[in-house]
Image (cartoon, rainbow, N blue to C red; front, side):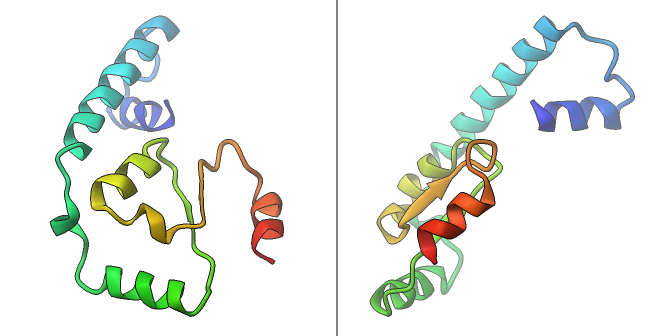
Length: 104
């Protein structure tokens, strides 16, 4: 919803829609986004990232993903790198203090 609000504000249309219409637009935006990310594969990983993740894992360094997207887990799965991550967090759900306690 926050990204939709940002887009509407950028276009000076933040007051042009009811909450119900905004909810529908956000759902459509998320659907389109999921369609796009469902097509990513392991070949889309940036060069060197998987080697870095392997090295971190081999050295027992915990890895967490904090994502503004609720689709972080899906993206990691599509890229076939979800097993490198010890924790995946949606920042709307977990306070940073809780996350730090897990890793410290």
